Length: 509
Image (cartoon, rainbow, N blue to C red):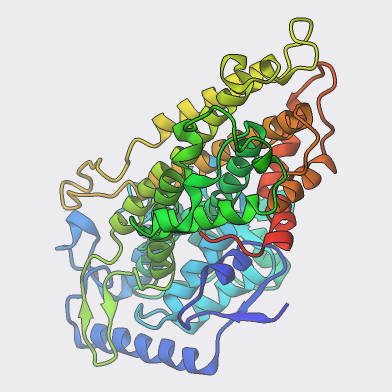
């Protein structure tokens, strides 16, 4: 795998996801190294002149008015990391820690933070060596950025804290010993540069977003399967209808459904039935899934922008200015994560309603709960209950975090974003929704098995074939938990979407 050069913009989402996975390597170009050196020279010159520079030769937050003697500037930065490493809760998964660490290096390498090249080399040695900081998931309010989690991220550079080394957790000091490196002695500005920023919320958000994009495609596949299984109509998906209300996501969903249902033998078999309209969960799928897609694409724009932004404070400009600002404030990310939560929760809500349409014999015209011997067998009765439970849990998780705020740092930091909370909850909503969509796919395949033996649309047929390679149809009650877990894996590993796209082309989001 080629080395990914950080400090150069833009890094697209596909590269960001690569940075979250084992095996990638990072580096810096000579051009970026020169920018870093130039930025550092501005800091060094400013301190030599005796100017009061926030966080460089002053205290932090409410203590910004306290001037620190030059001989204590390194200790000031070390103290900052130690005092701010107050995170609690379980550690972030390694993929989130790996991406957040890479994003922090990228942020500093953009050349507006005034750090030394030695600091970035220490960080890159740990990252490339597979030593990932252990970062507690809780404790950030999202301004001044992700202070507590980023402090834990920075500790291994100075030989403190803990790191993941594969499946074991070792001390930061031991990681440096294995790399043959000494603990870093921080210079002025560097501790603050390491902990001011939005990289933790952005990393968690990028990974949730990547899965949400996949789920938007799975939702269309699941809906098409359900439409076929319930002998629904494809007329509501005609392009001419959606041209009259041309929201991009709505048009994309309608086009996807038409492609998935193309060449169906089931559709013409009930062309003259007595149904006039299908339930909203099928008929309005373009409008509902489409709105979710629009929200997902908004989050994509915000997160890729944020990942390639400088969120340090103060910022160091090539002309010599050192300017205090608020680029560390996580409101853009927090708000986008709230939108993502709402968008993906909606996919779970409407999917659960389609599941109910299939298992309820008063609606479906199919055997109760899709059991082959109803009464003796319960079929998918409780799978629908699970879907309802998950969809309802999402409604609580989707409560917006970005509208909450609490004053911190003696009211100097009087408005905060709760960005990490929003991103963490978005990840949970995505995980729940993957489970719900897996249940819908299972039920739809079972319903198709119970119907007349007619060939469904080309995309639906591909989805059923991919599912049946891994999960057999239900022929008598069995423990369904393993089936639900395998269906979730089928959704999240991308194999369901890949199998369908090989037949119908790339599905739009």
